[in-house]
Image (cartoon, rainbow, N blue to C red; front, side, top):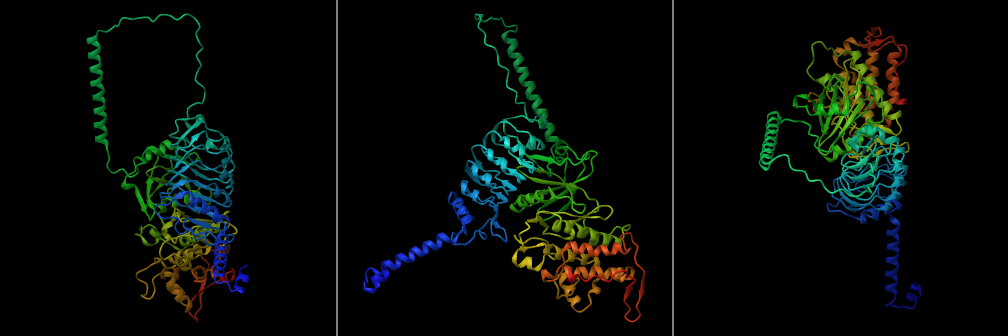
Length: 620
């Protein structure tokens, strides 16, 4: 029609048809721009009020929603795997269209003002591991279909307005190890099965819940029914009071004054015993969960009493996300308690620690013994390691009786490598630690190392090539490509491990004021020395004089490959473990036994009678 009009020279109709086609084309382009998951998220946005503009960059002209605020996608398939929008004052209702995000693994909408009921279609989230809707205004009942969420690990719906009973299907959620339904209006019998592992703190604030007598809930047995009486009613019996009016008045006054006196005594005693330096205030509605992995684990009640006695003098460390205290509970082994700071990053750190250490176990990873979730504070409870951390060992005040000799350094290097190798190659999904540093490597009395602080850890599916996260970590240990792009792979941990090896070999910090002015960190300086064949110069002189040259060469070679600027040139951690274990296979064990050496008079360097040639890591 447009062509005919143009041929006929119609000046009045041609522009109209041209504009119509342009508008249709533009509308078609917009409608086809965003994919189906983006449309589901747009429907979610339309049902919410966003007072702080958290969803302002959710544009339906984008092909995928992967760059939208609070959205994380799989790097290969581009499907949405995470929605994290806490503390944004969002109001409105949950969209049932979210159920179309069938690969969603984490939904965190805590501390908003979302209302309405839970859509039953959310049972489509078969990949969901974390569902956090704490501190909202969600009403209605929990859908029975939620029992289909077989992969659910963390469910937190505390402080809402949920009604009805807990679905019987919850007894099948065997993968769940954190549950908080406190402070709702739930009623009826709590199903057994998988819910037997949780204590009463998961259900506090629901006065009409019953069952699970083993955790302290009231019995669900019905009240006795009184049989009706069909006999003639008896007239009320009038009894003459045994006390006179004056006696009753005097007794009442006496009881009143006695009650006041008791209250005054109690208040005075509390005032006298009051300690203004309480470090951990759990407040009301908190819960303590201890993983019962052995006979030496304190109960939740014992922990509650002990936590109230923590004071400033018990502090043993402090980091960006919290403070760590030493805690002795009766005759049980000593524990370390980490109190997280009240901020968004700490909320995510708490979830990350539970999502990683709550399921993985390895001899070189710090062991999570329990946790506490309260309105005022969140706590993580670990085994206490009396050896401090690697930073204190290498750079702190030295005990005259402690000699940091080569066997100790080698033992630490191999143990850290084994821990990282397990995270990268022994877990499904894989785990990127994200903050490997000397302060996050803890030691026991035998100097065995334990990786700690998984607050920045990320789980990586088999199909993912990397994860995109907010850049974190410790200055001097962060891989250059991660600092630039925020794209994290296992190779960012490998880079940090290389810096750890350089610290062990040189005795210098990752960022050392005594380095040449042209370099800001230890890794950059060593790369420059290595390019000129002088990397051995950074090795501590005492080690060069006492340790076989082949051993130093091996660890230095590993370190230089790990800190390569090109991630592809860095070895995998399982290959690093294999390389370091060559020292053990050839008799150079951490016991202190070293191979015999002879000095080559032509260049003055130490050579070793070594059974195997030095491994070239560039082939790993």
